[in-house]
Amino acid sequence: MPDKPSRNEDEYFARRDAELLRQQRATAQRAVAEAERRSHHMKCPKCGYDLITGEWHGIQIDQCTHCHGLWFDAGEAEGLLAHPEPNVIARVFRALLRGVAGAKASDA
Image (tube, rainbow, N blue to C red; front, side):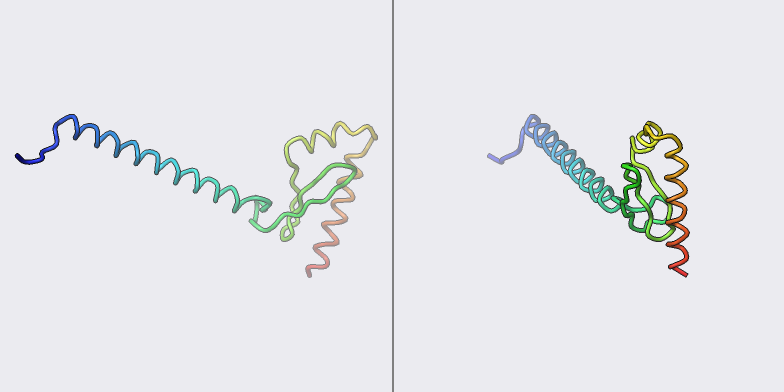
């Protein structure tokens, strides 16, 4: 008597294979998303170079080592706006601009 799988067996293995494929695709998608996240961590959104973190008046600001762009993480700009000292925003930006101008001059 030949070993021919029954219809129920065929359906069972087809469902099992489909579920295994779905799980493998989900695992691969998670790995791709994680690799993408890691490759962009602390990279400038404008030019892709590394960001360095500096602190000015208690607020952390990320600055690009190449284009000298300035980036605030969530909540940091609000922290600057809520600072108790009057005119701190203008002082911080003047200090940042002096730093950027100095960095650009040293790049030349």
